[in-house]
Image 1 (cartoon, one colour):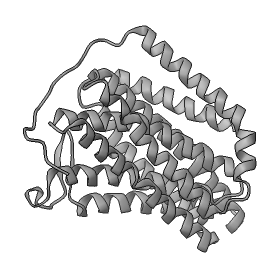
Image 2 (cartoon, rainbow, N blue to C red):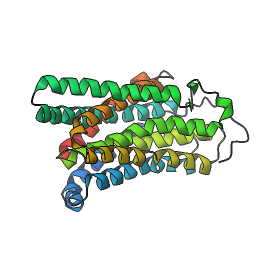
Image 3 (cartoon, helix red, strand yellow):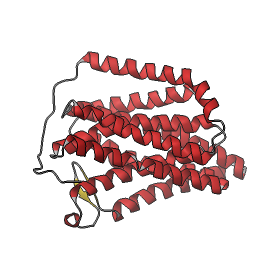
Image 4 (cartoon, rainbow, N blue to C red):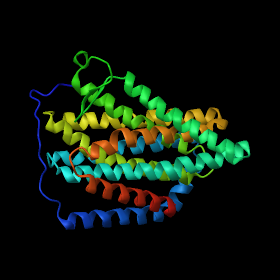
Length: 306
């Protein structure tokens, strides 16, 4: 994949977002939730015969593809306003927070209580699992050379020895891997709707993320097709995580509460370490916070609809 002939730096805040756009977005989200609740009985019958490994891989693959779907508007525009970008990032953080709480943490506690027969051990499993998940992501961020779009190269590796586009790919892959892992693990429980809600939430979060990533690549001088290709490639990391998560739970069912807690810790790390700081970097904390609230409620509504 070729490097851009000339990297550019843009500080474009764009035009204010018209109220009709915001209202339209909320209506579209409400329609999406209604559609999910309408189609769920049919979908539930279709996936009833799939194994945990099959459905975990399929769901994480579809969720990963939503990253590329979100990037499609770059063929019609080159930038969005900074406030909209930060609100979109906040929306993704809210969706991930809701998914972590209701599709990972609560099922982990329920599974641990059933498996170990007490609240005390369930708390231990949750605390250790979350600590291990967050710690694993922290270690990967320290060891894997990567670069964020706005805060520069990360880790101790020499960025000059690796082509810059791969540093971006590694950074986004570190973001997407735990999401795929969470989707794969999420189908290990008895209630498949938890996994479906998690996969839908990750897919929703991937769409604005894909658009933000693709536009950032455009601003650095990459062509539209190169930006789209990189975004697609990073989304395809998620089924790898989904395969790992679903495979581990399939082979060792006793690991389910630990796996759910581990995935929760990894997701919380991504939210706190990457998404929220990224959405606050340009002074649009209010828009980002509104996005968090909307995203949290949207995923909760989807969960209740299922």
